[in-house]
Image (cartoon, rainbow, N blue to C red; front, side):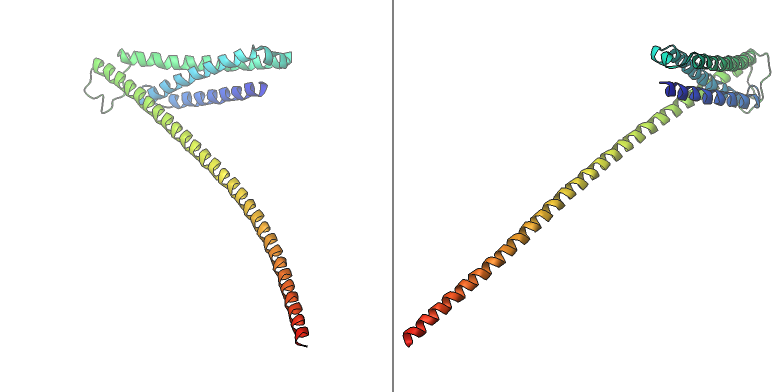
Length: 225
């Protein structure tokens, strides 16, 4: 259980580093570009995953079996680790909330948008509709990507199951071949034994026949004399 907790905590650390990297990437982009908005949307989902994972880790620390297996010092250390990573999570969430507020001010006309081919000739109402459309398209792209990933996962699982089936069939064939080979060897030994016995039997019969012929010839010669 302790190893499982540590492994899951490391996953939370990697997820935190991923989120920090995405926020840094967003900060390097124009504030209201479509790519920046996409990164904010994806990062919010990852933050939700991180918070769920932290809740689970905290729940595991309260578990009786795990708690009893840890020293008081180790339990305190792990609790501090969770506090630190939760603090980072809140900071990152606040950073994204600030980005969301800036986007809202853009929609209200407080900040002039970056002019692109899609925004030319649009008034404030048109910009709001365009912004919502872009967000909708991004969500649809993410959903499509998720479906593709899930479909690929199912295909990989099916291929793996098929490979396992073929492996079992090959193992069965190997076992059957071994059994058949053993039976053939046993049959060959029995045939050799029979051939040897038959050979000895024919030799004995030949000797008896010759002895009978000799006796008959001797008797015949005696009669002639």
